[in-house]
Amino acid sequence: MKEQTFKTKEQQAVRLLMLTDRLHRAAIESQIEKLGIHRSQHFVLMSLSHRNGELTQTEIANLLDISPAAVTVTLQKLEKAGLIERKTSDNDARTKIIRLTDEGKKTVKKTHELFLEVDDTMCGGMTDEELDALCVSLSRMTENLKAAGHKDPYCKNRNGEEDER
Image 1 (cartoon, rainbow, N blue to C red):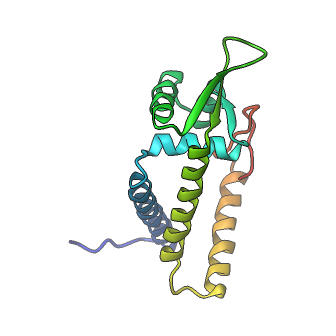
Image 2: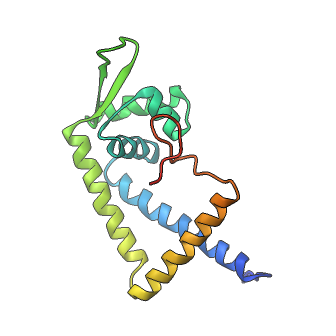
Image 3: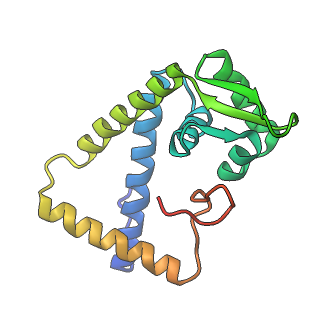
């Protein structure tokens, strides 16, 4: 395999950042699959967990920027697995409230534990000083992109506004 050369340090840094992100995502996905859930199902569970365990189907679709039909299919699988329950809203019979079940909460807790294991592996051997420098660098990169007008489409609150996570 030919070694890739970079014209600038910025290109090298961004390439390594993207590679690290892909490897981290692959490691996480392989772990959550051991729990019998897939990536889209995990996103729904985490969205519910971050929002006190309860959202409407429409809110889930908006938060994850996916179609209502895709949400329906994912919710059917999660409901069949006993990880969520659907309830008709007291205020509007057309609105379905999605809630984590106790089993769903246990699954979310397990995924948090798996994430910590992957993160510990990824950061293995790094000193506190190295981690501090990495955090400073990544924070600066994030702020540079925000200052240029870029927003994270996955950080929306219930009103569709940017929500810092």
